Length: 171
Image 1 (cartoon, one colour):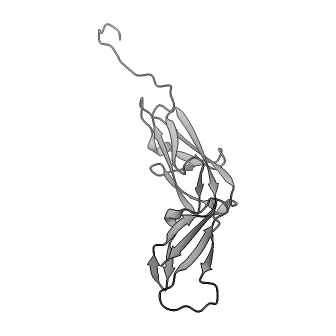
Image 2: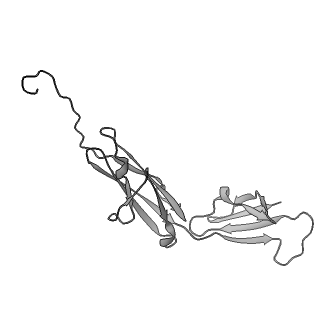
Image 3: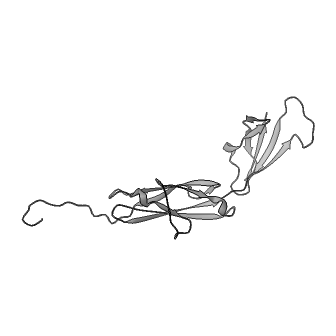
C-alpha cells in the first residue's frame, strides 16, 4: 500500500532469461555457401527485445541480427569442420538468454561421373544415360539431383548405392 491509499500495486517479477534457439542451421546438420542464420528468442514473462538478438562464431564477438536473421558465409571454414554458432537475446528487463547449435561445413561439390554411355562412344537415337554422384562429407541428397542435357532439364531416377553415392538414370 502507498501512504494512506488502500489500492494495491501488482507486478510480475521476471528473473528468467529468454529462451534462445537456432532454427537455421539445424543442430548437427550440414551448411554450405551463404547461410541465413535464424535465431528465435522467446520470453513469456516480459517479452523479448528483438533489437538485442545476436549471434557469434566464437562466443565473444557478437553480430547483430535483423528480425533474428543474419547472413553467414561458410567459405571461411574448412570442409568437414564442425562450427559452433552461439546466439543470445535479452528480454525487456535485461535478462540475457543464450543458445547454441553446431553444424558441419560442406562446400565441396559432389563428384559426378557418367557411367553409361562410355566416354568417347558414338550414340544415336534415344539413349539412356547413367551417372554416379558422390559427396564424401555429407552424402548426396537424392531429392536434389538434377540433370541438364543440351539445355533441357530432366528429372533423373536415382537410387542410393552406398553411404555417399547415388546412381541416376536419365531417359
